[in-house]
Length: 153
Image 1 (spheres, one colour):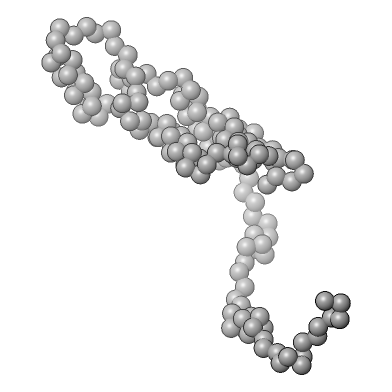
Image 2: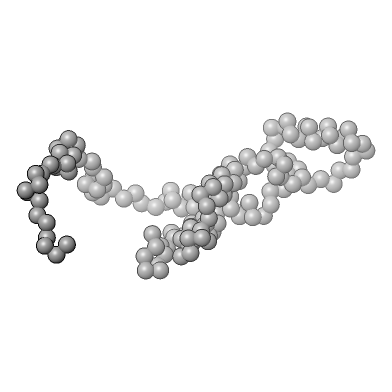
């Protein structure tokens, strides 16, 4: 929440990319804030990075192998695409490694934090309400004689 120009502080261990996105979302100029689709796209990218399920076309291959023919190269690519072995001949770029590392470290930090259990029931307990009683109070009909109209209107 933005209040009087102040922004919330982030817990230690919060990934830098997350802090950067949150700060963009809290920009004082609404036009400079990311659109919801941009946020969703970024979150999905992070999830792919964390799960290491990056789309093959986005991954760079590192190989010193020289292929004698296009067919040999195509066979190699086909083998790599079908292979279940992850991370062989694949370089995940440096920023992805940093993002993954920061999110995983953040998860580990979260596991060590104490659970707040005091008075949770008091804070989050729902109470039953009689909705028809509430709506009856909202829609009370009055006769024209019961309504007071100020003279200065």
